[in-house]
Image 1: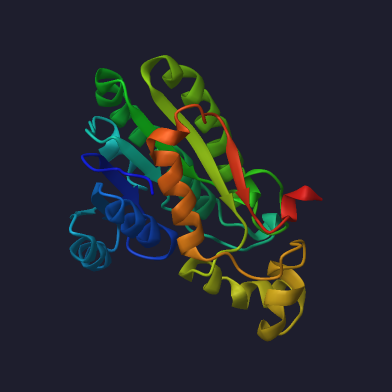
Image 2 (image 1 turned 180 degrees about the horizontal axis):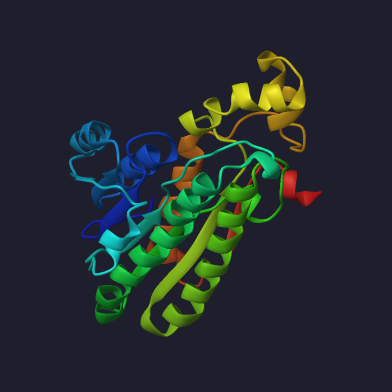
Length: 248
């Protein structure tokens, strides 16, 4: 069991899905967790459940993060959304919003956290990427672009942080049993011309060798290990958890 007693963690998008699972798993390992989410009630609910603190924050408001300073040992950049549209129909403001939320905000949070991590000589930055950080799918230009950018940000952080005891890694799940996935089923059905009951088998799991959704708790278990002392030599990596999708 990974022991994170005495460590502090910040999990963005922590009110549900992967974020909530990570908050719970990190707390169970002994960390003191701050749950950050635009959903203030959800963040408070998860924070109360794990004995942590809530931070109600709109991470797309990147101007408000420019002068932020964070004092945490573990940063989990998890907040994100999905929007399914052909490129020629993709709303420019929605594209910009997703870039701010899923690429600029992680950069600003990393920037805010590194000074204290460097001072302590320890830090763990976990960037919740996706199989779409490694490969692409149609109708998801903003999400794919943001996750590919996050991969590069994570690697650059690993190179800069290594001399200071700070690691930076990506976790790359396939489709996870979460609200993010559930919300896109109707759009996927419409774009692919199939019934909503066919989306799981014909779209979401079409490329995976293991024909099931990833459970949030599986992602959280990997996050806890990467946050712990046994992962000190793991940095600049991208850990796929996609049922074999990216093996093609």
